[in-house]
Image (tube, rainbow, N blue to C red; front, top):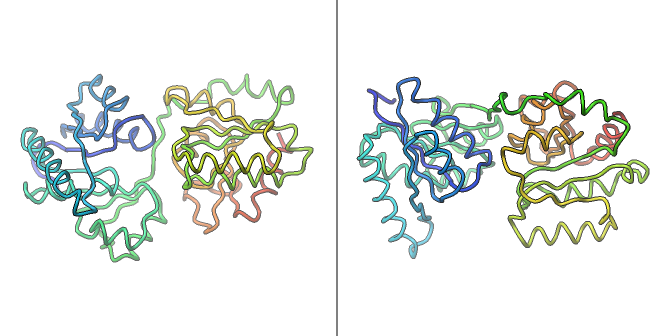
Length: 331
C-alpha cells in the first residue's frame, strides 16, 4: 500500500533491548538499504533509543498514553498530536505499530495523513482484544505465530490482510562458536536448565518450579536451575519464591536477574536445556546456539519451527516432567 519513497514511521515500546525492540532495531536498520528511510518513535528512553541514534536512525521519545479510560483521553489526545507533528516533519507514508497497544496512536496519525498503517501482533490476542483495538481496520496485520493468525481470523480479520512473519535471530551474534568447549565439559559439571524472560504470569514460572519439583530427586539434585530475567511483576515474583520454598528447592534455583542482551549468546551457551512455557524468540536463539529446547504448551500449538524430535522436544504440561527428565538423563 505504500507508494513513493516516503518514510516508514515505527511506533514502539522503548527501554531495554528485548525481543520487540531488537526487531524494531533490525527493521529500522535494514529498510533504508531498500530505499525506505525510517524514523522511530519510542515511549521511553534507554538502550533502544540510544542504539537507534548510534546507528544514525532518527528517533525520538514520545509518551503514548492509553486511550482506554475517559480520564486519560486528554493526555492520549495530546500524545497523538505530538506524534502527528513528528510524522508530518518526516514525510511519513506508512505507520507501523509494533504491538497492539500502540495501534490507537498509529490509526490517529494514519487517518489524518491518509496513509496506511500496520499492526504487529507479538503476543496472544483474544477476539475481544481484536475488537477493542480495531485490528480489522488496519491495512495489514503481521503476526509472529500461526496461532495468532488463527485468533485474528476467528475475530473477523480479513485473511488477505493478515501475514505470518516469524521472529528472527541475528546469526552473527547467536553462533555456537564455543560448542567444542561446552561439549568438552560434559560430565564434568552439573547440567544447567533455564527459563528465560521477565518474571511475570505470562512466562508461567510457577509451573516451571512445579515441573522441577516433579523430577526424580536423583536427577534434580545433580542439576542447577536458572530463572533468567527481570523481576518484572513483583507480586508474581513473590509467588514464585514461595513455591520454591514450598517444594524445599531453595538450593536448586538461581535467580540471575536481567541479562544484558549483548551477553545473551554467552548465557545460552552455558545452558544445556532451555525450558519455555510461553514460546518466544529466545527459543530460536537457543536453537541457534545448539542448546536443547523443551517447548511446553497445553494447547499443542507450538511454533511451526519448533518441531518435536527435530529442532526441539515438544510436550504438554502433563508430559513435561518426563520430557525434561529424559533430556537431563541423556547428555
